[in-house]
Length: 304
Image 1 (cartoon, one colour):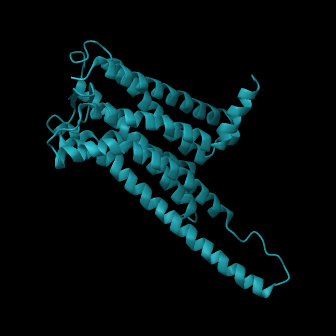
Image 2 (image 1 turned 180 degrees about the vertical axis):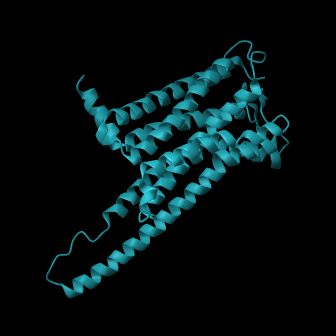
Image 3 (image 1 turned 60 degrees about the vertical axis):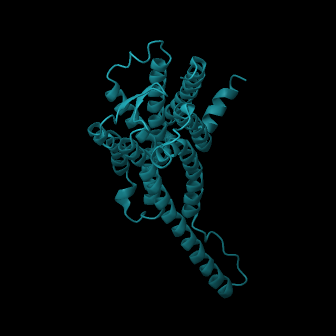
């Protein structure tokens, strides 16, 4: 049994990281919602990711409170349902990256289909985000001990000790969204490369015909913007990859290695890794959202 100090430190870090995530997410949503000029579809999708992260952080603080109680092993009321809710919020954040990637696909590749660029379509994407999050983990209820109290982490969740439940959870929350994101941004990247080469060929032909004139503005600025946005999102995706890797390693360990069992602290640390990564991700998201960042900095300068 791990010492009480280990859990005190781990849950305290989780609470601090989650509180910071909520604070930054609240700033993003507040600034976007209160400034008419910032109410764009891109910022709406950013707010969706921020809200999903805030919901996750609220639950993380709530569950950390249970883990810090002296009677944590007997006070876990409606444990399976709480484990289900925890899985739902864990799924919501990666899926929000997926719908954000699909949104960029609409603007970068499928822009000729104007209905895909409407607010209504993007509201449908957000609805799908939470519908997948709610429905995705339901089958785990039908797996024995799929949702249970994991002694090592003191949390009600989908434990890596039950392979069927854990692989389903990690697939819906991690592997499938990650695959979708990689495929979508791969398509956008290839389209950007093709567009760049096509414009380069046109530039050569034009320069041969009009050798005494300077030809400008041939590069598709919209595609350049998409490439920049793609680069920023890929940074966030890398954080997502890092966040889920320890949990995935535990799942694989339980199947391939089995003996010896994973080190006892690894269960708690894998979950803590997710929470801290989400805090870092929220900071990066704030930094990359220039409208929000500039407004926040301008507001702070009034008090300096």
